[in-house]
Amino acid sequence: MKTGKLIVFTGPSGVGKGTLLRKLLMQHPELVLSISVTTRSPRPGEINGIDYYFVNVEKFQQMVADEELLEWAEFAGNYYGTPRLQVEDLISQGKWVILEIELEGARQIRRTFPQALRLFILPPSLWELEQRIRRRGTETEEAITKRLRRAQEEINAANEFDIQIVNDDLDKALENLEAALFVPC
Ligand SMILES: Nc1nc2c(ncn2[C@@H]2O[C@H](COP(=O)(O)OP(=O)(O)O)[C@@H](O)[C@H]2O)c(=O)[nH]1
Ligand SMILES: Nc1ncnc2c1ncn2[C@@H]1O[C@H](COP(=O)(O)OP(=O)(O)O)[C@@H](O)[C@H]1O
Image 1 (spheres, rainbow, N blue to C red):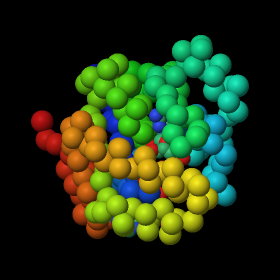
Image 2 (image 1 turned 180 degrees about the vertical axis):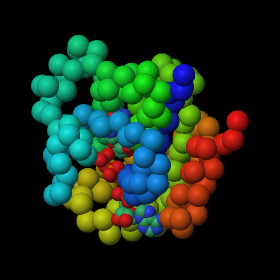
Image 3 (image 1 turned 60 degrees about the vertical axis):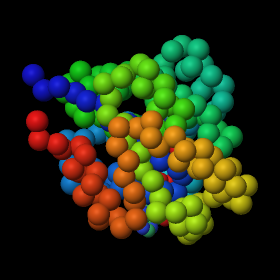
């Protein structure tokens, strides 16, 4: 029987997690990205059920109370969480499931799924991180400030993770990511 695997993918907002994951998933369709629940509003182009499940705060709190979330956290004024059933089903089918989550959620997973592989994506510098968030053009000034403040705290915790990858050159970062995931055993 194939063994499923849980892979945690963390790093500051704007570091390029989404960009790296899109490329990785195109090349490795056997990997599955877990779709999170969030109370944040959809950005233009984001689709409910594809990018996130967009819910209101009441619904989110109900899911927490009903223990439907494997982990959850507040980030920059919104709630985010991983639906438990979806992940457990996929892992029991032998799939490799990726959680793209922030630091507090990654810490929860470390306690509940100690066997998960945990990766942290670093920016080449804080200056470049800020340029990337601004260039993306999806955030208000207030949201950018919150994300940058949080970024330093997250970067300080990078050593808690099994593997650290710097996303400077995108293709190089992708190569390092593949090397970390597909170690011959
Ligand atoms: N704990 C937790 N964090 C999540 C989850 N889904 C997304 N996040 C994180 O929430 C943060 C904000 O995500 P988002 O609003 O999409 O902004 P972006 O990272 O700037 O694109 C990022 O660090 C995500 O990795 C989740 O289910 N649980
Ligand atoms: N290696 C890279 N070099 C330059 N720009 C990048 C790189 N990786 C991602 N970006 C850009 O940085 C911005 C933030 O990337 P994104 O994937 O949305 O980050 P995250 O999901 O971590 O918040 C996007 O505009 C993306 O095109």
